[in-house]
Length: 240
Length: 240
Image 1: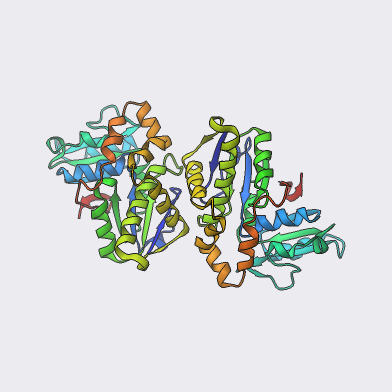
Image 2 (image 1 turned 90 degrees about the vertical axis):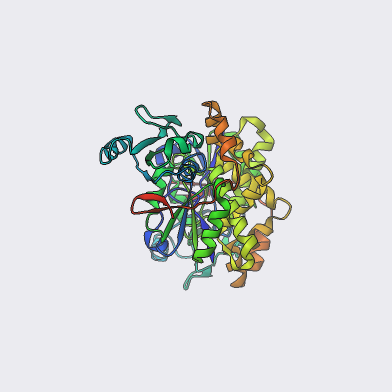
């Protein structure tokens, strides 16, 4: 099995992706939100690119069935029900609901890798579950950090590096790494004893702290608190 | 001063680049060849993309004035004077000559960042010289690893990380790093005591060893053996 990680969020070649498991990571905070919301009973998450699309989409569903969530500039969008803090997505609020989500980087990323044989949402919350998913599939893996406004993001890469670390520890030499995956593993090892340190060191993490979201950093650094693997298919993310 | 490194060889936005120093790195082996050849007295290096272009270009110059160098699949091209091993580019062979060079990744990279205010060739050979060049210019820096067939390359990134390390050690907090530059610095630190280890760990380094070019890895891992900074301008690389 071969693991690659794409360091810039440029849509990969769909053909090359068609036989791989694609793992979308936007640990601060879109995929953390998605994993959290579905673990709390949300029926499905529909990732859309624009705020306008979100308002259009919600009209297709019965009133009260659907919530709008997401951010622009890290902040809750006017007229939306929820922002982009996983902690907001409690069972009380989301159980049995459909969620339409639009964020700066993460929601677009799912569409960029939609040709993957499987497309899953990864975060620190569900590291063990996604490791097991990738191993069970036994096909090559492309980790796709959603980046920070088109740029490389440290925190997503460290999370990807943790997935690589877990897979190596289970499978050993059966795992082949590209230079990028090998490097992500080194970056993970640097922060292994202090994952939140990667958040504080990253440009996006610093920006979230400056905007008052430091509690989200603490929350999103929790490992293995959720045992599900949300899967993106036909434009919708559901628990598989 | 802000330092960024672009982890995938996608041509950057020319406008954003127009006020930056662009540092092209293809340490195995194109920029090592360029730095070496110019230090040994080559008049100039003309990086061209295709073998056909190289054969066309050479016709424009008096016979005996110009050499053809480069590789495909790491090997010397049929009809060319020189391959892609820096060791071949001795003073005896290149002094006073123009060199037309075509390689898989490195020569293209110069054209990809040609809108940079300055575009320079970096390698381990000339780390101190290029550090001083970047500091003297006192403008933002984009390090551009030329990659490995469009993919991220470990060895170029570690070389870029060494430039970052030197700049931080000289300027301290006056240097701001993007997440990518911060990560390249961590990758450099991992190999600081064993630079050639980065070559042996990389996909491209392993391929060169398999093809019989291990001596090039040893040669290209030498630090600060050359005190020049080749500069790319108007399609040609010269010592500034």
